Amino acid sequence: MVIQSFHEPLQIPNLDLWQVLFERKDRQFPEDKEIYVDPDTKRSYTWTQARDTAIELGRGLKSQWGFKKGDVLGFFSPNNIDYSPVFFGVLWAGGACSTANPTYTVKELAFQMQDSKVAGIVTQMPMLPTVIEAAKIIGLPEDRIILLGDARDPSGKFKHFTEIRSARTGLLAPGRPRLDPKKDTSFLVYSSGTTGLPKGVQLTHTNIVANLIQLAHCELRNGLYHSGPPDGHGDRQIAVLPFFHVYGLTCIALQSIYMGIPVIVLPKFDLDHFCKAIQEYGITYASIPPPVVLALAKHPAVAKYDLSSMRWMNSGAAPLGRDLVEQVWRRLTIPVMQGYGLSETAPVLTKMNIADWARFNGSCGKLLPNIEAKVVDVDTGKELAPGEGEGELWFKGPNVFPGYLNRPELAADTFSEDGFFKTGDIGYADKKGNFYITDRLKELIKYKGFQVAPAELEGILLGHDEIADACVIPAHDRQRETEVPRAYLVLKPGVPRTDEKAAEIVAWIEGKVAQHKRLRGGVRFVDEVPKNASGKLLRRVLKDMARKEDAR
Ligand code: 4UU
Image (cartoon, rainbow, N blue to C red; front, side):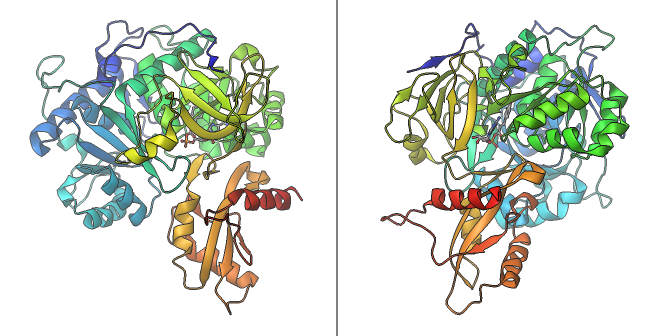
């Protein structure tokens, strides 16, 4: 049974993202409205400044690098107000952006940049050494590394992006290539999907355009997203979610310029910095992951600030405990509403309506417009009606990606025969159409909303001299409201199964992976890792074991 959205279907224009953001005629806010604001340096971009910076950069990339339609620029940077104007430059030139986690190690960065065949990488001074090493590995010339942000290279060797520009001629400079919004990629974000290593999720222009329109429709209906009068007293948001991840990318970096909502851009989450900015700028809403909800519910420092301007918050990217939602409400009278989505769906699929908030705590909301869903029984393949029970969640809609980069063989496992995307998430819909996520069928681990691919850690662990076999699964750290990776290991004969050995392995892997992939759930030694007759890891058995252990 196909579950339909209760919203009326929306018209999704056949335009590319640049056209929708910068060329549409029905913009509801003035062009000199400040959109991206840095609270520390006070530097900002208005809508026009973001557009003009992008055109100049796009023209510069074209004339100086020969950057053309289909080329890819890699991003390796924490949030900064320059981040979006730079990716708009790439979009202007008809290219795509491959956004990477700026805490990646050299190898992790090289993997993604190689896989997406970047023509260049944009970064900031503190990450420059990592980028230089990664560029060497993939054979990218050093003059294709450029900088954004406030710090410049004192030696002058690495150019700032503002040095790669050519002045625009006329209001909307000619020279943009013609794109096919339904086919051409705008962003390549990386996700491990249901199994294996991270893969490039090809988000088309239409995928992102659709999600901006779908989301805006819901939030306007909720009475949110006021772009406000020209003097700027509309909604204001704050970015602690990173722009390299699809949640921060669509819901903050892009939605703000689409709807004309100023966004205070923070480089990372720091509770005091976050609360101070909310108070100082009268922030009215925030998209956040569950650990930030936890901090708002419990951290004593929150009491030092006046957060009364905040009208609502959206939590997503990982499960959120109902009691935390209640605690935030009691402490701050802020409703925290949930959304649910994936990199592969650009990202939002379901969203809570404000009218449902108090009654359906624990739900991640209802289907966005133009989205259809199925709940499919994992054992029988039966399609379940709302209220009939839980199964794997499948979705179809204009925001669903066409496939993984260079991996056409994955299509058969990723999509059903009738074109539904199989998420690998387990959940159900109630009779009112509210969705609930209850478990995960796929391998993925989410540390504070960040993806950890077990296969990647297992591959590294198997490279350890003393490890014979490995299986990594999510454990639950309730204190931090997050999953953490835990390794079940078979040691080679004669290697002692001691606490020291466990600590040694945890420390060994720390040097090899980005911070969020560390084995925070620890290491457990076992005689064998459970496998089925054909040798496939039975993660479920260990996941259940971990669940029992963590519940103690
Ligand atoms: C339980 O994390 C994301 C996208 C997050 C997002 C986007 C818009 C959240 C809210 C919102 O409004 O993408 P990925 O690809 O990094 O991870 C996707 C996975 C899902 O498959 C699911 O397992 O993250 C998990 N997830 C959630 N789990 C995402 N949202 C939720 C949720 N509850 N609300």
